[in-house]
Length: 512
Image (cartoon, rainbow, N blue to C red):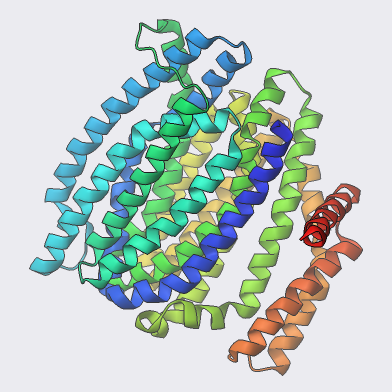
């Protein structure tokens, strides 16, 4: 069952990404046109600012998986119930704090913007901020149920819920913003979708997973262990969150609000890019914790680290190189009429964000390894160092070059922190074979050359502003890319996986 959950979890992860991309493809121009670049920029800043309230979580989700996994392995139902009760109490307190902070920020929402907002814009911004504050308050206790589903490896249900949420959000959002309420509509849609999915998760935990809660006294030693563990996870979460909200907030403060709209559209695509790899490592998180608990060798961990990294690199390199050749025409239509004049700016920003997310994405399993080994203290400070670099580089670059400068500042900081410094720690301290990892990644580049040469020829010979040429050219590019990997890139395990997947697809089709 666990094997099926893992396989289906990965498949549904990629399906959810594909569905999300298609939904965004069709709804993004509609949303952009209905809201307009100014209102869209205001909404982007508000979302980034309220999302920073989730920092109060302090990495408790990771701690829950770690400590609940131990009780689950020992089949200690009393301990599991106590852990559930303790985390619900902690998250309940966080919800109250988030509400108080959210109300304070709601009353002072103008401070997030460089230019003064009109009375109408300010009113909508305050209402939207308060609604998203409520959404954040709901988010905290819901994390316990989300994590419980993950630690029990019920990936199929989790991904189905995620896919359902992707449909609900735009279906509710578009009619709301069509009424003219702008950022308030986006906030309401986000909160309704989140609340609906939270109710389903709670129902599943209690009815299917026999979720038990005990609010009796918990061992102080256990509480101290959790606080020690989460204190360093919190730094990692803090840095990740700051890096996510930093650019739009800084752009809102130091650049015209339209620049935030440009960044928001670029970041939507960058988040899909990152999700392509991170969802796979998330599925393997319980596996990594189990391997470490079983004292499996560093060689076994490195083998899995490289295996997942290779798959991620193959997929992400296809997206990156394909976007370089075909991204301009895609952005032209996807951004909508409101932002069409900014399409080249969005295109360049997307490439910078793709590049900045590449290394963290293909090495995302390393985060699970360091936390499972309880060796996440030093990486936490490496992430903090990267974040400080991001601030140092982004502020002057954003002031001078706007959204391009913000993307460039992020890329430079990631190269120094996540690529150079963190990889040294992986190799020397965590004992992951990083040298072999990068040797394997570099060894995949020749397999990409046939597709890249094809893309260059296509761009030179044909008019890449023609939608149909780009569509058929893109399909041909994907075929050339995988032909190159079949001939020169895939190892025996990857060939076997491709063959098995292909056979299963054909068997399904044949039965139909």
